[in-house]
Each structure stands twice: as structure tokens, then as C-alpha cells.
Image 1 (cartoon, rainbow, N blue to C red):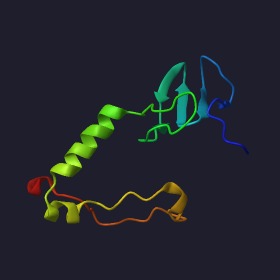
Image 2 (cartoon, helix red, strand yellow):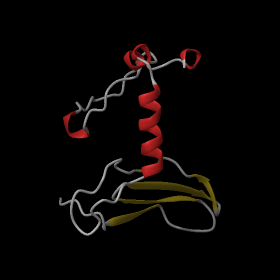
Image 3 (cartoon, rainbow, N blue to C red):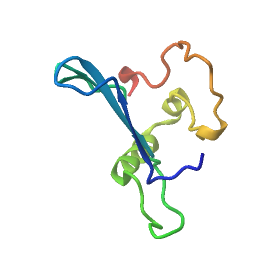
Length: 119
């Protein structure tokens, strides 16, 4: 399937009604929202995902546009403020999604990163 940032898909689970349980989902480029309805009320709005690439558009009509520039700049500023020992404790380096292994199960790991007490 070709990735298209303008494609969005809606899925209905069950039969929409004012009584009973049913649900719906909308998914698309950097978006996934799921809702469970029970007797006309939303009882769950999870899982939910809003995504963005913290990068600069390199070409095309939106060249130079940055996704979430304030958040990215703040994160860069925070990282630059760490001393060498804190940098060694950080949770890891960014790995492009395309090169990450996809484990069959998430497993569990001990907490990593900079403890608040050491910040």
C-alpha cells in the first residue's frame, strides 16, 4: 500500500445505537483514535495516537516547515544543558524507526534514564 498523508480510514464496530455497546475508529497519517460507546456515552477513548516527525521539511511546497518547533527546540536546549555524566545516563540515542528491530512482545526492562534526584 502506498502511504498517503491525506488518506484516513473510519471503522465501525458493532451497530451504532443509543443503547448497547459499539465502537468506532479513525486512522490515518500520524493519527489513530478509538472510541467505545455504551448506552450513548463514550466510555473509552483509548488507545489514541497523534504523531509528528520532529524534523524540517526538506523539499516541496512546505519546505522549511517544522513540526512542533517549540517542543523540539526546548528538548534540544535541555539536552545541551546536561553534563557529561548525565548524558551517559540518558535512556539511549535516537534510532530511526526503519532500523529498529520489531520484537514480538514488548517484554519488560528496568527503568533507564536520568533519575530526577540527579537532575
